[in-house]
Image 1 (cartoon, each protein chain N blue to C red):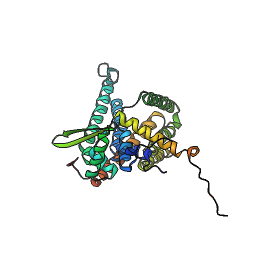
Image 2: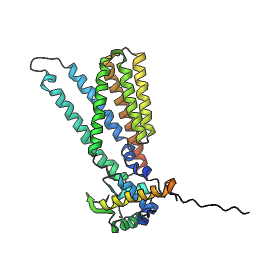
Image 3: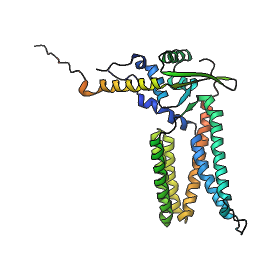
Image 4: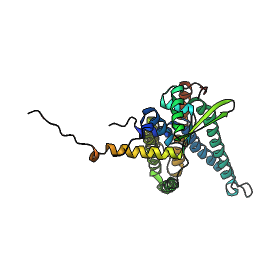
Length: 207
Length: 105
């Protein structure tokens, strides 16, 4: 007797559905490139005793406000554009185990990232490999070739910065993050445009 | 040998339940798109599942647009897990029935 439906494949569709419109890539791309932008702008502000925005926490507050605004915009766009076209799905709240494992993963990522910047010359390729691996794993998990290719592109950007520019250390890492973020946001925007064309607005009329 | 839940074993209903098993809730439009069923067919299957207590259906409005939210009940989740276990047991090689083949002499 054969199972009538591949249950695991069907159950994994919901997480793929969240990535389908490209909004998640726009979100991640904006979070990365805007973070770099805000801290770069803060570095360009002349420092004074009372106007030191960094020590007063102004930059951090600005960064937090920008991040929250981007997240708010993402949720609004999902609700106004994606859900009326292809349907609404609420993913389940993460379990305690998945929260702990996610936190452990973040901690490992931060430690690796911290050591990346102490590596000096090799900071850019190491950061590129970490970003690329993250994207490839995510792409394979949600079965999205587009995200896997974004990982490959990240590696390409890392190779380019390492071999063809003089950027090193934290400066090189920041440029890499900005370039990867921008490229992700652009690819996400193109995907979002394609998604809108492929899925005209539908309304539920019968249930 | 474990018995298969016939209500869930039907392909369309199994797809609906498998889809709902991985989400907190989903609307009619999403299920329509993912299952590829017609509106009438999907409604009928949802009604059968609701009757069995496997799904909870909430009819509401998003602005002026009707919105039907569907979620798997705890009974439905348990039934789905039971179904998967039965299916696994049935497909396990050790439990497969071996039928001796008699060759003509």
